[in-house]
Length: 305
Ligand code: ADP
Image (cartoon, rainbow, N blue to C red; front, top):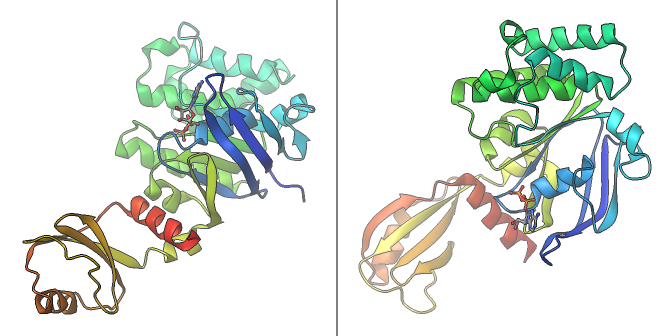
């Protein structure tokens, strides 16, 4: 079976000379629910922009369902639905017309287009708004309209760029449910996100991108198993002595009087206090370092050293 998405050696240098992608390889199998996860500026939108034909690549190749996005652009586009971050429909057009018009680009008959549009507008809770101008919709409705439009030609692969950025919790959950159903019905879904929680809830496989490079590509389960450690931050009453080591613990110096210690499941925190006391250090305060995505990054960087 050809992969839903195959990306090889993809590079992008923008006109200002900035290299946003440094040779990315990615494979997403058919039927997968896949996240491209990374902090802002990592290169997620650039990657998906190239895949969807919106951004010109500098080097490398990308294919959707085996069709090269440049040399077999029509076939690639027919198999692909794209939901970019910005609302890019005509705000003065009516909701149903926006969805039906899109179907025309893919050669659907008027009756097929109408049927598909109506099904999607109902599924995405936009049916009551079908004759309303798009500019009158709320932000959440506009986002759902973008999804309906992307799906009207029944693509095999759906790409969503930060689908729930700025979306409230309730709507986020209902969008997640919709995407899960779609995936169960066989559509391959690829999304970008900077929320670890979103990738964790939805996706079977995750690639982590940072500064234009793939840092890790693996199953969600395997990735999260790396989070079985927790990092604690200790503020000390005095400066951290040079070369401080606590036997059995991984200590890093965060600032002059602050250290971070990563603790495995089952390791004792009391023993840390004891050891610090033994070397004459008083703890002023202690907290957990809660950003799990950040923690994952630290683990991955340490792993690659
Ligand atoms: P992400 O989607 O992960 O937030 P992007 O792919 O949007 O990241 O951007 C990756 C990097 O490329 C960022 O440093 C961004 O500033 C830069 N970049 C994006 N678009 C352009 C552009 N048109 N010209 C120059 N630099 C750009």
